[in-house]
Image (cartoon, rainbow over all chains, first blue to last red; front, side, top):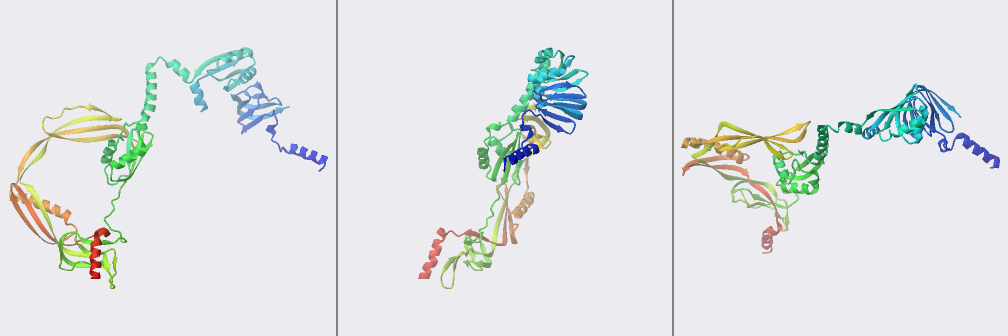
Length: 93
Length: 405
């Protein structure tokens, strides 16, 4: 196998996701229970908080949760839990 | 679980208005202050924080430029601080813990399982003899040792198992089955006479018959021997078996005093009531003992809640006085009573025997009526006794000597 072949294999591995994404530092981990509850790990801060929108800074991106009756049920230094009726999730790089 | 922990530690409801509420949230997160149930509407933030961390929020609110208001406090510390002056409540709480923890260290009830023929009262008495009763400290019960003690006190038990379930001591008992007096078929034995008598019939299945029809035999005499001799003169031992029917005599004597005393209970009855709580007895209805002669009967009533015995026993003692009445019998009425007693005794003693005849004679001697009955019976007088080689060696020698002669 030549140099070109090795390069292609490495590219394919990266594309197919052989290595778990959460190992790469900085990415937030989102755990969803339907559209009623979300646990987010890797939170850097809350940018906006209202009943209809919660905007969160995770460092690499800003995640916006739209819906109704949204509330932060639990908050720690690096994670939070959002409860409510979530309609839309938006990722901003 | 988390809710319970928060209740124990205590928590405060807070309200944040104006300024940057998001910054306030972020500051809480960065300062490791746990806040929960955070709701935000119209720039008014509400939530809960632990009582210990509540004061730190003021500083964070100042940085975030918001107005903080701590309103209600919840949980055990708040409850205790508001009710500390109510001594009754405090005493009740202490009593609750004493009852729950201290009382669970004792045996509340003793349950007995597996009884068939032995009475429960007898077992309870034996158990209390070895120190297993209500009110005993659970830690003082050495199960293995106590099981052995109970076994030694109760010889009719095959095994005893003690199990402590909470505050209940469960005693499992397996009764000993009496081994029937039968010599196993593979063990050599003799057939001997149970009673004295005259032989009527002999039916030998195995062994050597040692008597003939018409012979008189005494109690314990060998009827069928377990030592056999074949036609070549070789001796061998076997399990002797057979039936020997003989005429026997059985004598039953009834003695009845012509003058005797009987106790007639009077109508007056005194009741005493005692209560036994966890082995501590106290009288709840006292009464003095009567001056006259009396006998007492005790009735124990245990308290049951959902089939489990509580450590409370109510004992009622009935003290009944009685009058002594002298009764004198004439010969006819004595004979009548003696005959009734004789029939009863006959039923128990000669039930399995064929009665061929009887002679009854009644006499009066020194104020006692004696009824003597002699029953002539026909019965199988056999019983088997294991052949003891050491004892029977003389008999064996006798055979061999005769053979050598």
